[in-house]
Length: 270
Image (tube, rainbow, N blue to C red; front, top):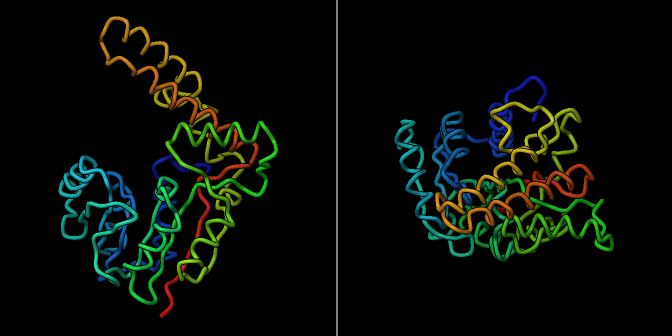
């Protein structure tokens, strides 16, 4: 987040940083790896005029993405592709660039995902992204650090969070040339850390559900609603898992042992 800038504007600027790193422009065909429902996809297509294809394993999310693309009047620039990171249904050299925004932490094999992305890029194409990583301050021998890492992994359904070195080495291992890589969280204003929306340091009713207090209130409410069968059984358990994730993210962020924005820019030789 940025002081004096709205949450939405901060997110857009975070996305535009990748667009500038790629050098997005009209006529380019770009792959959004793990597009979700397409928020960044539409934001970048609208700003730069590039054609962007959103890859996602969830057909439900892709249907939402397509509907939102149409509603935004961006069908001519935005499209979707069903598939997973390890088996992209596209010909070799199909794309002029690719990016991911916090998607590849969910890949069961990050290096294999890098290899597939490398395959579908044309020679000379750029791949940029933001990855979730444990920072060099993380100490695997510290029980508290390990507990927070495991809490993030458990609450976000991740197999294992990579280190900076693992991301860099993985990119190089499949053939990419690493142009630059650094933790963008270190450049952020200390008054507005990335985890601020989760800790409730600027509390208001709209943000309350995302704060620690709001999460506790929601958990209690869900247990009551389960008892009267107003919500499906197990809803409170799901909320507890998400609470673990949020609390672990905030604590790890405060310690500086985790970042959700390890930026990398890599190029396919050619």
